[in-house]
Length: 248
Image 1 (cartoon, rainbow, N blue to C red):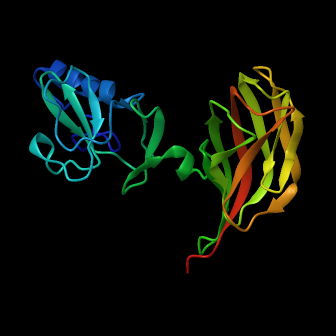
Image 2 (cartoon, rainbow, N blue to C red):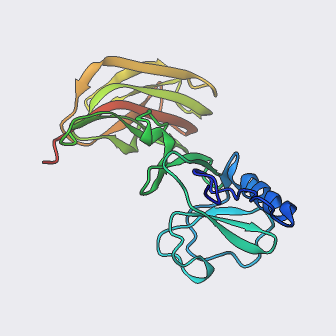
């Protein structure tokens, strides 16, 4: 009979063993470190100077000091010493400083949503990918345009080259002054995504269009109506799809 369990390597009590409580306590200590695994960080290569009992870290590649050779393992500070917990495929851990759940593949820790092929919330998210990495990305680009002034204001963010735009939405964050309304569009098409929009704080518009391709980076333009802008702030958001070419 082996001395430890197969998966978690918990020590077994042996026949006629003296001081059985030592082995039992060691197994409980390991379980306390493994069950509902949550680590503080996964970017450190060296042990922190003043750990607190129970602290756990995923050791980053290139480990040094007391963690040399522990790359990818979980370092567990308990009873005044570091204990190495060697992961098995499928182990999951909550990374507190990232608010992210990761999983051990057998070679590396990766985000669980990526490992499962789930869609993650981000400014740009890949929703489909072929064997040669041809893909479709879905994206949202946002910008707050403060201190509006003049007849029109262009955004710094742009519709990406070769993007298929679904729409551009707006929110009046701070009441617009000078103008009695404003249009949202692009150069040459000032109200493409909405015309005569509200200047009061909290006014919104979802400027949906029939999907349209753009062939150059294109800024969003807000055009004042009934007078020039003298103040106010509007947040704009571009909603788009972006095809990606095969990589091989």
